[in-house]
Amino acid sequence: DAMDAYARQEIARHGDDPRVCVLVVAGDVGTSLESITKTLSTLRRSVDALCYLPAGNHELWTSNVEKWASSSSASGTNESPWYACDSLGKLVKLIDVCTSLDVRCTPTRFGDVVVMPTYGWYSDDFDGTNREYTALEARF
Image 1: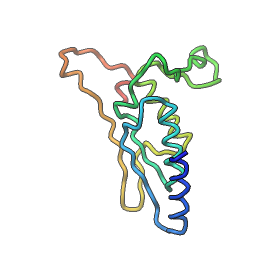
Image 2: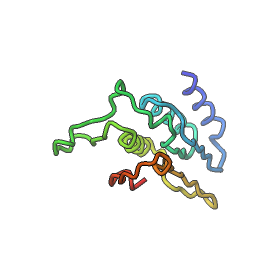
Image 3: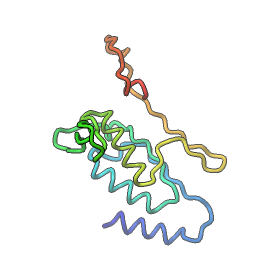
């Protein structure tokens, strides 16, 4: 398709260039894991390093139609990871997808430049509730 053709063209165009080509994608790539995975995979083939912040509001939208959560490990087996069917579960799944594609979503140094993803959340202080964060929420 067009994205694959573009990736091949860019790889060929920069093939002999000794500089490192880094692309930073700051989120909001899409809502479905399938489209995000395909986009990141295509982009990754066209650059030396791809940095991505998987916490855009579009990435973390959830739908009862999309089946990305697995419950097999909840029973104690190690067949596949378990992801909660909510935005935090989807974030963890996206980070695992990034790891499998060699897409960086952690602080990364390129010579004198550091790419530092910033994960931010809406503050509950604005809605008047004072509920405690879960252990997973507190990590972000």
